Image (cartoon, rainbow, N blue to C red; front, side, top):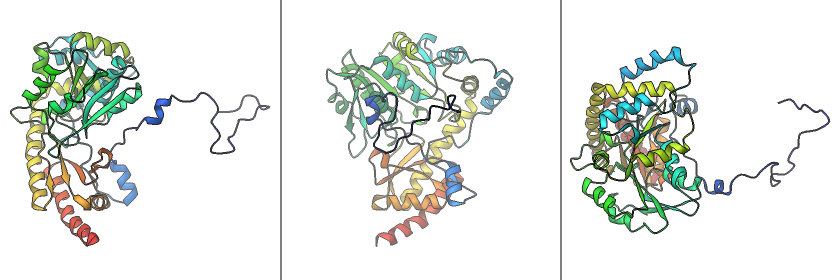
Length: 390
């Protein structure tokens, strides 16, 4: 911007150690660890000069969005000059009918990430605590730090099983929120129905259980629970879901929380206005109607998950049994080399380093063609990695 008073020169720092002018940022920012997304297709194309790049890093739906959602977006385009419905009334009504709950038990947000932030803003005071597992989705701890709260992360066992007693042991008088991601990101393991009910029954009344069920559609274990049955029985918990995964709408961001009406009201009190754009609302509402697309997504994911795990096993790579649309694979000392060589060949997977899993890679379930391409690349890459280590 042009300096309006030529007699006043802009101040310039002469040393790196000199403090910048103006107010200092919040002290909490020193502890913040911003979310680091997976590498994008455009990044890898530019860095390695590749034409074809396969992305198996961000757990996106390889079938893409529902045709009904795409048509809904096209139909909404002429009205883009209008502000969106602040409470996403149509989408909330559809969710309430689909899940047999009341409209007042839903809040729609800009993906599950915003919902986590809203819960933290609504409930956490400085000095409060969050209890959760480790490794798990990093946004729970991020929301806690944002509010000057502390996160107690309970290490998962070698099996990555989500055991209620392990989490209950971390709950103390300062604990206010308990986050459970089931199926868990990045392990793909889940909390069985009986464990979830047990956890809920043993939590003190001052604690709110938040079940992040972003990957629930992909779970086909008979003892899996997505939390909605408990909500219909009057349980005090919040269930988070997203349209980014099974519904294939990651690019326009929409998610929702369901819970007791008073909890939802508290979240609405800290929600920004017009937080979910009109295109996202229209696409999500239409996607709920497209059972054919959802069924095809789940069917292909179940088959692809088997194809991926069996292919990894043939290559001598162990993986964790998964109830999600990704697999956590153990590459041991070769992990860093395998990750880098796959990128050079145009295959993007997710490093486990951000979760402290330095010997693991998280691999999304893609199409059959994408999985076969990954496995073919891995066959060469593993030989290369073994030669480097020998």
